[in-house]
Image 1: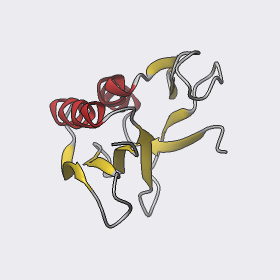
Image 2 (image 1 turned 135 degrees about the vertical axis):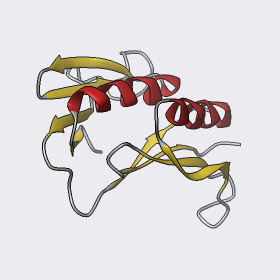
Image 3 (image 1 turned 180 degrees about the vertical axis):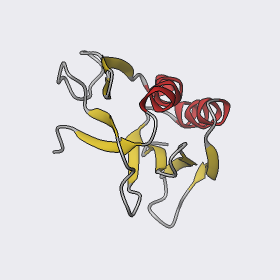
Image 4 (image 1 turned 120 degrees about the vertical axis):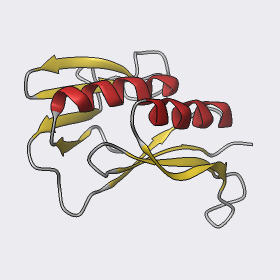
Length: 128
């Protein structure tokens, strides 16, 4: 099980805003807010990581090459759609509209967005 992970972003202020809006439909909130870094996590009781510092970190610097793909768990297909709409409104670029991806498995429902630095961010629900 992965406890936490992070990416390097070119502009921490704009990425903090992007991820605050984009991850909100999935239950994520901003946990740490420092000048050069930020972290996000799901509050206790939501069935995800309980690390009080958050499980997804942003640090300001040169974005990684190649850009990584990060998939966030969604409870329902509606949450995947809300993630996608929030990410578009926050300045993300569509990289795969919400829908079933049966090539992965019959109930794989996901949406993909490129964030402001080009990272491929996904929300996925594995239930019907």
